[in-house]
Length: 178
Image (cartoon, rainbow, N blue to C red; front, side):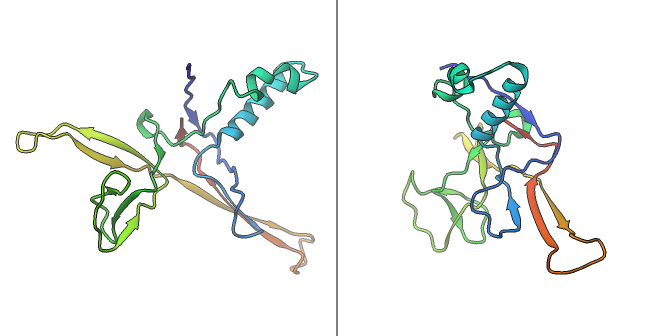
């Protein structure tokens, strides 16, 4: 398998809304860039640069037959791509460490609480003379969000029920995804 890895720096806030937003007048974006949105952006760029009469026929091998995969872009602070945090990771409630992977071993916990961070990366450190074992530590990103409010006014001078307030929760600009 050949892979083309891209680093994507957000030049402006990005909102790719989740389907299950809780309010009808709000949009809460994913904390990653879905592969389907990346494919859609590339299809749009392809259409700008090529005279295509039948996109499904002309560009099928590039975008639609499954031979090219568009994976989700996850945060990559320090140039290292993070992955979704396993749902099997738990800690004792109120304690950030240690993290136990209940899929790997059976641990009896008094008050288990799932690790509620969307992405992680495991970093390994060599042990020292006192503890020669390799130490593994989970690293979590600091994702930045941008929340904006938009108000629609039917009439600038009339403050009635016809005016609506929309709330957008998007990924903030400047972040890097891979």
